[in-house]
Amino acid sequence: MRLIRFGDAGREEPGVLLPDGRKVDASGEFHDYDEGFFAMGGLEALAEWVADGCSGGSEIDPMVRLGPPVNRPSKLVCIGKNYIEHAKELGEGLPTEPTIFMKATSAWSGPNDPVIIPRGATKLDYEVELALVIGRTASYVDERESMDYIAGYSTFCDFSERVFQKEMGGQWTKGKSADSFAPMGPCLVTPDEIADPQKLRLWTRVNGELRQNSWTGDMLFSVRQLISYVSRFMTLLPGDVLATGTPSGVAMGMSPPRYLQAGDFVECGVEGLGELAQRVVALS
Image 1: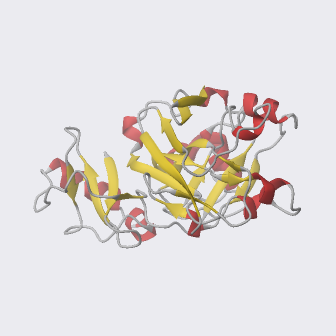
Image 2: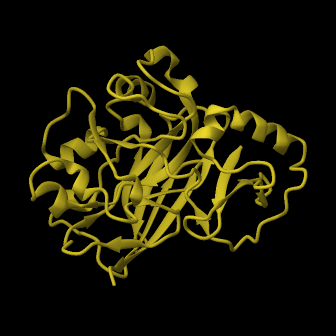
């Protein structure tokens, strides 16, 4: 099953993407894909509604804007340096435990919305990632049970301003949290459609040039391990997003670095989950 949200930014409605490509409005049956939806068995109810033929749901204009496939989460948790080749390209050694950082949820953005260069930024970078959405409250989760806590998977891009992140002291959050720096989508794909999240190809193209091209099997810490690990340090709530790290090929890792400029077109994809497409624009 594939969940979408559509409409103007901040006013999105829930829908589903059917196997035949049609988008169907689910707002007559469901308020939104948010914490309450996942906590109260919304996925199961949605699956029944879809199996019954989406009764009362009208077809959505295929050209309508898509928003992020879940409502703005309580937490947007990210993992740094989680791919072996990416850690090598940065020359900072392999972490012995997952590196956790946060992105402000105000960075939340749709899969085709522009990415905005913030004031003072000169080193804008892209990072394609496999993201997962938590389906039920997760605290001190046993690694063997981690996969039971996943509501679904989506494509995510952790846009980063490297000057803010690396050259201004403190933690990474300020380089990760500008408006538009957290696009996700185009849909949330339920786990029954993803046989193994550690066997997915993921990629980034900039102006048509392939920059990142890897697979989730290069992760240092697997999806299963990450859910268990992060839940030791914070309670993950239904609807929370966990972005699992990026592979090699980021702009910062090139020699010389090739950071994004206004007008660039960035496409990020994960096998079986779909693509993001962002035009880079300067802050007006």
